[in-house]
Length: 353
Length: 252
Image 1: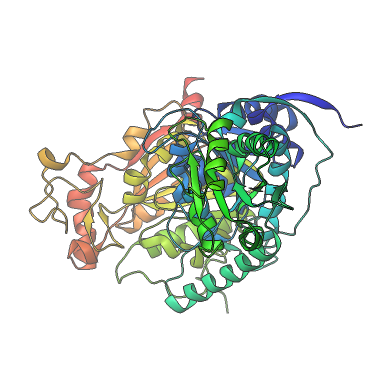
Image 2: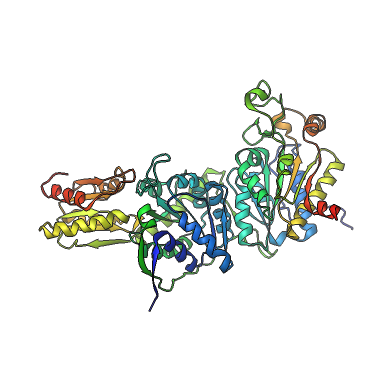
């Protein structure tokens, strides 16, 4: 049987990354994700890997860009203000079509904000953050176990589609401890004929680049990239449904908010209210199919978020505003309580959205 | 018939986009000749900057990557730490290396990253049309210092080689020029040493090449080379600013 260990969420990410074959980590200290760097600093030298503390978030993402271009599995991790600084590199990585894993253990914002948990980087992660037309695969773990499994999944998807996978976690899951098992990491191997390895004077030189001065070429590049994104939207969306079979109301929540919301769904069911939960595991691609189908059978939605309401826009988009969507939220590092969610469910039942 | 002069193998057979009289062509050629002579073309990975040399990735026949403005040393660090057996160099201008990328420059030098940096200093932003650079001389007229660089208003130019030489980290810091044949020959020697240092695992080597920009200086190519001699080199003197291995040798 696989060994069961008690771990912090942040450490689970680091250990899973190593098991996924990541031997290169570049980062910069920021709360509340520092355990990832600390874990890597301890482990990497012992397994012949590289841990390097960069001079800035900008340098660290550009080291990731270089290492990814050289064809190795590579990652960085940060928290909200640090991810803003990495936006430049994220855009270049997207424009060069190379794979990387980036972790955002979110804290409250905007600005320096706070160091308590938040989900207010949903827009930044799913709608861009950096400049230009591009997407990242965004994975939202709701447990320490998922911090590990989605990290492995994230590396595989990044290699498969030659793009960035982002783990969009939050300070709570990053800091909390839970028992987890490490199943044997399923490492998918993809050829990297584009990688910078040196030509050995045997092939034409590889160029990793995002510059296209001819607009017709740049347009074609973007068209091609969006074909890839379309395939991802069709094939890679992941979500969990809970008590949705006969649900008249649908709570939508991800990450730590989904853990809280699940308790509220159980409490509401105990009071006879037919409510269920859809928990997006991929935020991009968004589980549009699940939301569309739910929109045809429930009376309304409740989006539970640790932000001023960001995912709610996607729920409205994919329900085509057919059904009302309420927002149950806290922000700035405050966490929504099961009672607050329960109250929102009760309000929905009364038709108050 | 004996071949007495040919294009280096490490340079692609396509025309440069550089302006007439621009020394980038000479500097590219020196780097390519050194790659040929050290027989490292097949294992070299070059990092192109943002600026006039942005399309250097088309000109060198080794594997190439294009970095964001100023980030070339960080990108080179990521490559070198992933593939220590490869030879990694960056090719950067003064705006790229000494302004927006100064942090990456200083810290890669401090870490003694085993990479080679070719730093082309022509005291102006060329690609964007001639703005004031971190290395523009006091009084120098540019598009964004139309009345001449006023050091009371926008500060003094930075002598990158002298500054980096104060660090414990780097192996080799030198300044050369390409305004006459003698200097070109010296520049090539320095570039070769900077690559040889990397092959020998000695660490961070930076060659600052004092260059010219006839177009944005508003001078003929000939006049621009004279201005290098009369104005640039007195402020940016040619010389070896740090050579750790040589210092060790001397102290024996």
